Image 1: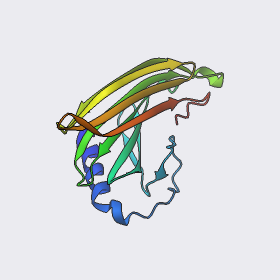
Image 2: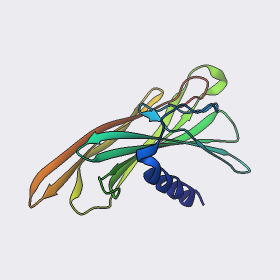
Image 3: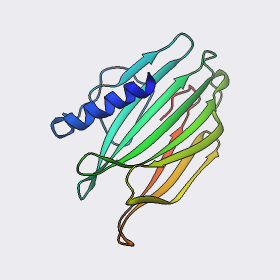
Length: 177
């Protein structure tokens, strides 16, 4: 269900991207992104935890753009959270070239300070012309960091290289950005 919802959200964003009016949502969110905010944020609730999703679009030039999707799960204990940030690289035609996901878990007991307890990353390639020449993830204190470089190669020649640093940070109140 979650994958279906995220897929439908991505399709909606792609179809409305040229006409999107960028504005902040009036809803109170648990997320923050570096790129411009889209008008609506998604909110899903299950019996034991909540999932907050926020998406932003970045113009990379040459017809390429990146979609950053931040998902935050709130555990029933309310003193821990797991979040993932996915950067999806799109071509001018709207097809996905590659994606990189950083996932981290945080604890923030009694509002003292937050701590990143685990971090991992995953990646996928959807277009044969693209590959990851580098990818990594690490944690330090209340922050998780992911780095990647994706390259487009045609006839053995690199025609496009995109390097990104993705971070997830949790403050002492459990706010993840």
